[in-house]
Structures are given as structure tokens and as C-alpha cells.
Image: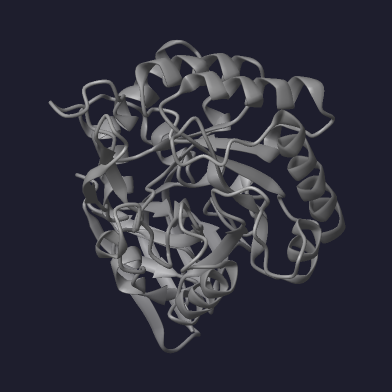
Length: 376
């Protein structure tokens, strides 16, 4: 019922200094310099004098029902497992479909999200997938937004990629308008989430959407924006125009792919040029596939990644590149919560919010994870 963390160094993600934190059931009840509970019994007291406490991480792009299949059935990836997510400090995930909306669908995505929720995670989903017209659960984007509790937006719609369904600007505008309408009625974020391939020219659609439509800029979120140097350059320009972007962990330059920008390098570059980091998020793309195509469009290899890479790369930004903890952590806590419109309960350590937190040692190794007040 009660958990008391004593003498913790707290990043909310803003630095709060040394604090005591009290959980009551699934909520944060108190944050004080010192909390004494002599009158209460059965209090789980944790000495955090040598530890750092961070908000539970939010991963807003996870293929929880599995992904892949571009190279045939043998390249399908397995679905998510709750313990594999929680142990990496992630307490909230947003499930997503990708290239395959035929053998997988929004109904199975919803069912998987409910399963993960019952096992301890907070979960949401995007309706739709790569394809146009958008596949939905109830027959329309608006109805999914209004009547399906977990649906917070549409995505990932594929652009700049050989797997794209080549939507027109008018089709994208209509999808955005339908999502906006559903968001207004339901009070949800109404994100239109875009998968960006390596053809950066399709970013022109995003620039047109924020300039030529009446949809607020915070309802568009393109991801994989560090896939190539040219795409990242476009991302910087898009930020300057007031847009929002999502970086993807796992893009590490190597002999096979020397053109990508590692997420931690991207974070440092954005800080160095004075970009508005509050409009930048980061996600793992976990459980999806990372296919490699030859020059004829055939899949020659396919890999998948774990949610582990999300905090691993944030940790590199902090420990090796000197990015302040507050700024680095905000990409997977506060910023993600705000763009998802769940900041009233997620994304920071504040009284009244959900009791999600990550306890780390001084080297940012994860020691314990709490999700909705329960220890994992």
C-alpha cells in the first residue's frame, strides 16, 4: 500500500535535489525533504541515499504485437513481453502496427495492449498502419478515437519508403482532419504519426501540413528522423518551423549503414544549435523489423531490437557526451507525455501523478522499476 523512498536524488526530470517520495497505492502521495511515517504500518521503505530516481520512461513507438514480414513469414518478429519492457525502465508504451496490417490488425493490437496493461504496463495504441486508406477497428478514424479507449492517434503512416502506399497530400490532409475531429470529441492527443524512410523529399508533405492546413503542429509526429544525415537536416528545419520530431534509438553508424545519425549524437547536435528540445521525443521501434533491401528491393536480412536500447542511448548521451540528465531524460518522459497529452498523469515525478519511477545507481544502471506503485 505504501512505499517510501528516502534521501533520493530526484530528477522530475527537472533536478529536485534530495527528497523523500511516498507512494500510496498507484499514486505519488508526497514529495518532501523528509517524510516520517511512524504511525503507519506495512510501509516498504527504500534507502535511496546512493540512488537517483527518474520518472518512468515512455516509449511511444513499440510494435507490441510484433512486426516484420517484409521478407516473408520467416521474417515475422515476436510480440512484446511485459517483463522485457519493465526491466528497461519503460512503464508506458504506445503500440503500433507497421508494414503488415493484413496478418495483424488493430483488433489484435488492442488485445495485446490490454494484456500488457493487465501485466503492469500503461498502454495506448495508434489505429492504422503503413497503408492508405487507414485501417481501423470501428470503421472510421473518428470512431476509433472516440469509442476505443486506448486509441490516441493514427499511425505509423509510411512516407519516403519503398513500402509506402504513396498517399497524396490531399489524402494526408483528410486523415489529419479526421484525427483532429476525433481528438476534439474524445479529448485525446490525436497524433498523426509518420514513418519516415530514407527519401527525405517526402518531408515536404509535413512542411505543407503545418503551413497549409489548420491542424495544430503538435498533432504531427514524424519518426526515424535520424535515419540519414539529410533527413536529420530536414528535421532541424522542421523544428525551426515549430514542428515536433521523434528520434529512433538503434541507428548506429557502421560499415553497412554509415549515413545514419546516432540518437545521442542527434541530441547533442540539437542542444548545441539551440533547438527547442521540448518538441523532441525518442522511441525504440522495438519488436519491429529492421529489413535490409538490395538494389532490386529484395530483403537480404532482417533484425529486430529490444526496448533496452532506449535508455542505453540516453545513458550514452549523459555519461559519454555530457548532455545534462534533465534534458536527456525529458525526451523519454516529459516531452513524450506532453505530445501524447498524458502529462496530467505521466512523464514527471509530481504529487498526484501515477507512481511510475526508475531507481538507478550513480552510473545510471537500473536498480528497481516501479509501475503504478508496484515494484518490478
